[in-house]
Figure 1 (cartoon, rainbow over the protein chains, first blue to last red):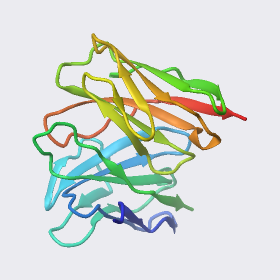
Figure 2: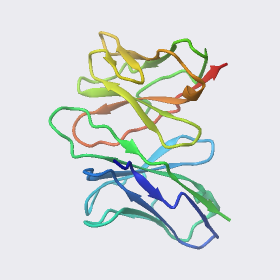
Figure 3: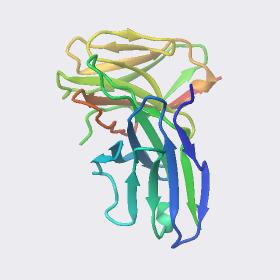
Figure 4: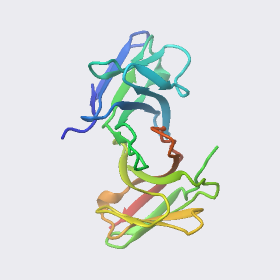
Length: 117
Length: 111
């Protein structure tokens, strides 16, 4: 029973390049969340997606960042024209469709660490 | 706006029970209390959650006060591997809402 899979685990980009981070949710999970953690800081919510829909993007920077969760395949967090301030750990979490029993637990992946030179 | 208040740091001797407090005085009736931890920049790890009643699982116990304004996470026999940042989060139960992380408590287990 594989958990939330993120790749690459480490990514190095030069300023101005594009970064693509992938997240495969747990089997049976249809909801994906992306978080960013800057060095020595806390976890900040970025975006919440269901299959083919963005539900909440209140934490996404207005420019250069986009996310998708297609019908088939992993969720992608894309950062265009990266800058040094984008260097961070990016965590993905997934959850199943909320049932009638109440609480819904998010399961996190190990993260992707982006370094911008 | 912070929904929970936690001490920034705590120490606990190895083998003893670690008791981590959390205040959530503005919690509403449909909000659960969740605890996660993050060990040295790994992905956050779910520990336990509860609504009204005390809860126990293989990792920890969660004690929620009767008025639900505060709770305590108990790690019964702390080990060095329990050194981590522990997050107490309240979350509405309307669907698949995001978790909003605060600054947490940095727990250090002392050998």
